[in-house]
Image (spheres, rainbow, N blue to C red):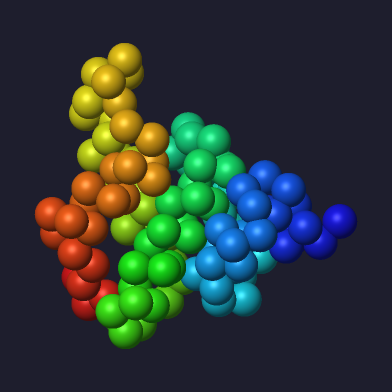
Length: 107
């Protein structure tokens, strides 16, 4: 099974395509390892990656995959400060981070 097929099975076609664009040629394992390192579910990371990729594309913001994965890690870390019963999904945390802080590819 290809990386795209694995992603599509887990998160749907549109999110799979966007997440792969975020990875920019990196293997799917880069996303899975980042999720594992944060103690998170990798399909949720793929959904959050898709959201971030669509956001940057819609604003013409360019950044490499490592920078974007770092942004997802920061959002995951920020979400951990919320009590578990009220903790947002990573996708929601990324939405909130983007609304509050935007995305600076140079930061």
